[in-house]
Image (cartoon, rainbow over all chains, first blue to last red):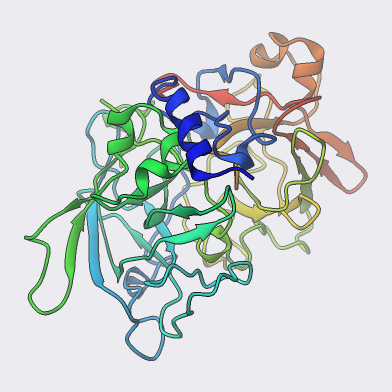
Length: 241
Length: 180
């Protein structure tokens, strides 16, 4: 049986042995073993549709979808938070009016999902999925509940740090990103083979939100800020809408 | 500038990503509808039951769609965007139109993104329509590698399997201005 100590050793051996993106071949994350490509990716110049991104608008996303605390009849349990930030491209330009999707566990660390059967309570007032569009400055904002840590079966006593899954689009197709936002100071992060699959510590830090007391509102919620930089776009500013 | 690293979609993406009609770029009853489908396979050739495939494509005339309505489809507007999850056998399918070439003399393709539990970052590839015209990207690859990027035409559709690893491993792409 693989223990956390075994996984820690594997994580240590691979530290720094990769670039700023996660290693696709990262055996401490056991599910990656049969699912990572073995050949280098072929570098190509984007062409045709790759130079554009799909379009979304208020017709696709209702404003209420950005508030995960009002999706059911009552108040969800847990620590109410706001998560906000800017989505920019590699030149610092805002990604405007583009789709951001999130999904997460509830405050007890349980997903609203049939395959999540670990014995933490479901919250009848929290589903854990939301969407919004970035505004003209590239800003997204979600009202939600701080997710809990939860166990998984990568190894014995494996626990994922609290995290929110994010799905993002840029201004061209090549910027498509799915990632996870983590919380500052989480003791589980060092032990987590998914977070640690990004072996460069500076790049890893980019996945951690900052606590922002100015976003915190009295008697109501804690504020977190998380800015997201997508890869460079291949479109010129002239083409921007 | 550093870019945010990717992370796996994890096992519970069904909560946030799939939606009704996500794989129907046109209704299956559309007179020009084709089924683009295939399996996502792991290094042992087993179907990957927890993957998400996204496609983004030009319309039949080669125009890049600029219309919205990919999440709330009206059944009439072609937005060029689709999302499908694999079933228990690793199979995905879309109902869509055959894309045209966006520029004269280029082979039309579907831009494809692959996400899965166990995949620490998304993968990009292209699913090219079969044809005889020269194509710089395809022509520069040895035949076995090239074939992984070419759709097989079927009587009633288009078949495109995605091999994450191993024999027949799909050629995945990266673009300049992305971190390696």
